[in-house]
Image 1 (cartoon, rainbow, N blue to C red):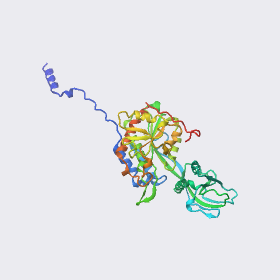
Image 2 (cartoon, rainbow, N blue to C red):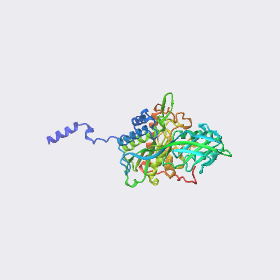
Image 3 (spheres, rainbow, N blue to C red):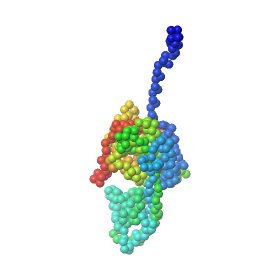
Image 4 (cartoon, rainbow, N blue to C red):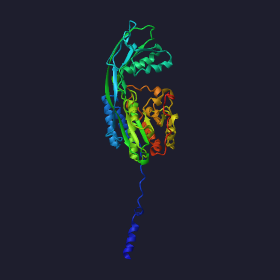
Length: 446
């Protein structure tokens, strides 16, 4: 009895908290890492990435950096792949300046440009098989015809009315940088001449071209589905890591660092991969992809889209230029093609209690919905939208050597990525599924 009494007295002296079961600590909420955002965007936009040009050493270096990030986070390669680099081949061509004599008059270099599918182009009006001769008129509607000849399917001599001089100069600038094609070009050429088509015509035209295959790579990683019933309901998070490489020097700087376009969006992909890996509760499979070759025609996203069944993609979050404050103010972003599905409304529903707001695209005249890497899957019916903050009509740094990290608002950029992460929760968990976009056909093409 004495021993029992002593034991009771001893227990009475212990702190009350020690007699209770220790309370479990409240789990810390998963957040997007501001440190990751800063580190990755600075690395991608650094001078040693050389502007991440398509087919250039800086582009390869950026891809290798991103593959290492996916490995660090713990993503898996896509089924059937041994690594994170999804390689594909494009064909880059460069045509020399055109020497053209039209009706005995030598054309100035700025008045003729060619896209040649043959190593040597030599046309004369006496040829047994002359090119087709067409005219682009002065009407605004004729502008679209001009760009339809950029991928020659027959030898064609195109006279462009001087009312289309601005468009002709744009085309000439594009051709001067070299052209990129997803397939080996056919052995045909197009020659554009600025001026009205003469009633009678004689000509001598010559040029040469160099064509080479170039291996490019998307960088793709996977977080497998936690719910085995949802393995065919992929959710894609994407941005493009390529930019313009080198440009004409301005104040001694020739590197187009592309901090906002689109190191910012690619950084978001890395940060979101890290976020969802840490959360570890995605019911649906999550695919994180950094696209190559967006700037030269969207060839990276086109190749990627061919590797997927579009009916097995529940949604695509494409992220493009989020480094600066949107026109709606801080803690806002806009969604292209907002009206084409209920994607934006679903995202906003998951931000209840947050100050963040997703807005419809305020620049419909820019046709941004079809100008980024969401376009290919959107055309196939996937609710694929681009999230952006860029005030593109007023962005004087766009496609310039001054698109540097120092011009970005990294605090707001991190808030945008956090909002994307939070707003995606319903789609990632399988509790929300956006409505499909009507597939783009010849009947509804815009």
